[in-house]
Length: 380
Image (cartoon, rainbow, N blue to C red; front, top):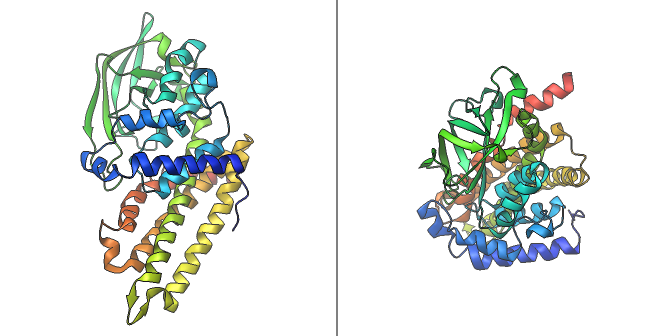
């Protein structure tokens, strides 16, 4: 089905992203997977290419184009290329809205130029060892001490955790205020008491540095509070829809890429004297998957269009996230089956897609949480 959501400028940007990935990423990605993280220099190269902060005002070195479709293009191409080690989507899609909407003028001057150049890598620390998707169960806390906040706690599953220079930390600043007792504190590399734990060994996404972080009496100056004290939970709720749309876009692109590589494989691979694609079961499998991907993409594209217009409801983002990631999981699994034994070999891209994609239904809020959000809107 022809997509009509992008224009010629988005298509040109897609070509730029593809060229960047082919030249700067794909030749090195296998080595990055062995070392457990990408080289820091690829961030700076991306900054020079204009791939970071496309929606950040030009005065800070950004693209000056507040159009999330550019983020969507970059994410789709990164996913289709299997470049799962790049933490750019977290940086651009998840962290950027917090900085753009909540930073003071002074904070923007301090952080946004490095954000766009790739010299300042970002992360956001929500999840804790004992909370998972239950954000109200966050135990990391901070108490006021003069003009500073003293931060203590631990976070886990933090994307870009090892490389990050700036981490937005969700912390409880008033234990008696319920949902209004959380704030966002920006912790910077080198602050005493801020430690990186182990780089976590994951099933897939081997080149994506995912880490444990700990905070022991970290003195965070009041100038590093993001937005208003006590409004952290509200800020999270306002920004999670974009994060979930981003995951849905990546999942749809991942399913489409898996299907494309499987179609080519079944045309070339022979069994019993003829291409695997010529068997009726294969054709039916391909037909079903192609339909699922097309229907999913139509809905996700509609969500993208509404988000560009600032009209995407939280429940619709949740629908897109759980449905698209579930479709991706089913499609990739069936594609592995159509590859036969070779589908289980990591030298084949479909095997990498299989292990890389499994986390999609977990992060950004598990799919069970997405259904709970949707269900609550239905029953009031």
